[in-house]
Image 1 (cartoon, rainbow, N blue to C red):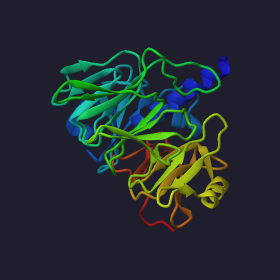
Image 2 (image 1 turned 180 degrees about the vertical axis):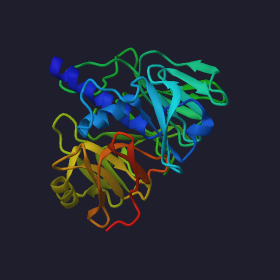
Image 3 (image 1 turned 135 degrees about the vertical axis):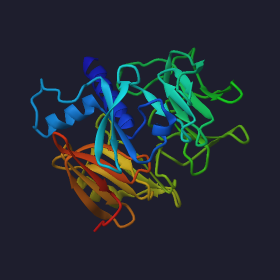
Length: 331
């Protein structure tokens, strides 16, 4: 039991750091929508330095409880006024007009007006591509054979909250994970906890329909998707049309990459950033699915992607950063 709880907490920590590293950490829209800024936490930077063996475990050259923003135009790291312990789960809507902090939703402008308070037993939520709605699951975590959330019987279903009309709609279906990709503007629901039963909800008609999909980590174009490696399960890659598993590419990726570490889609829709097979903490690679090969390798500790998912921020040492165009000059 303790082992599963620890694994679950570690997974959540990784997910939170990844989200924060992609730039969703401050409540000011003019900064949140800036493609030239990558947000990281002081704790994330200190962890990177320890990984690089540049500091000792008890050293903290960057303040743990604060956010830092890296200016991509001027290659400068600036300390933010926002504290991590207050904003540790902020996610901006795609249009940066709304902000979700834990179970609260904030309107932008000064980021101070509380619009609504959603239920306090939310397992996760996703924004609609236009940023005007939130889909969320309510329930409770059960630590059993998997760290994934299992909704309680009382809190069954997926809710969609409209931030403009302040109305809610219930989709009567069991749900474990959600995705609301921009490529077709439909809400995808995993209602069997990673057993390959993905249902599509069409907001325009209100209808639910089965899909052939097995997972929810779609590429930006929707042409590909993968199922992450969790609890010893294999990382798997699929294409949409014709639908099928790309097993040869999976094997090639597995030879080069640690698929249990970083795995993030890049903006071209067919390249993924991975941790290296032998050293996934200080060496990274870009794998192009369509070229079926590694197109770039990067040395350093990974801190995050820019909002456009094209450039990555890597740390080399104390106050030593490198911004890498992950899709330019690939071999």
